Image (cartoon, rainbow over all chains, first blue to last red; front, side, top):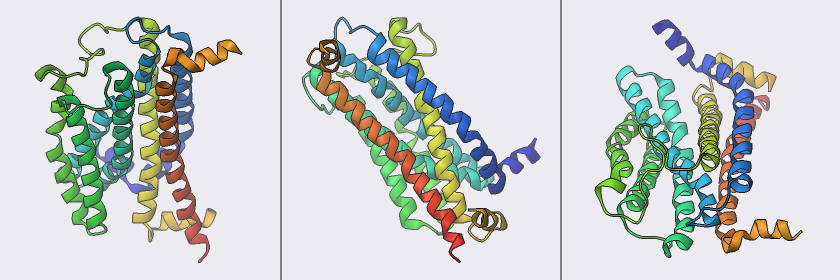
Length: 245
Length: 49
């Protein structure tokens, strides 16, 4: 078992395997987005309370979900890197941070633009919005810390520690709509309860969430490959790759 | 034609909805293209030597 893990976690085999995964991931991602966009923008009827503005949900909810999901992946990788010193985990965490920050910004912007027609304001300093903004700052802090310390070996460890400290914000974001009074509505999707959305609106939303998760996987692979090429400049497999072009 | 315009107008919500989708499209594409360009650059780097 450990042999297989270490074999896959070696830079060269990760590079090859992940590159081979890219085409099928991209096709699945395109199909998920195509169905989600058709279902969300064309097929689903206007909401009886919010009219057509609810269609912002198909960008906002997947991004908000991903902003937390990506951070949890980063935290898991940071823990693996600190405990077992598997360098690939550090590479995946480092590659996740920029896309996590962009997705968080997207969640904030789409929420703000949705808030204007629905709540009558672009922004309020309430619990959900503020804690999500703090998440963006944690992503940016993580990226800045790495950029400052790299290429020192301590960069990975310091960044991993920062990432693990920031985990405290994740449950705060998730439960903020229950713990405090907020303009933001409660969860419409949950693993434990029946969804509070009609199927014709729900299935496209699930497809968009799947599409964004696949998109994240694709971007992480692309970024991790670049990171490996840079870190392993002197390795034989990188030299060989360059000769082929 | 009118049906198309109505679809984009979305009863007045069109500006909000489409600006979100435009921002999302730009962000999503940029995050794909930048690492792809960097990848091409990294592989080219070795050939010049």
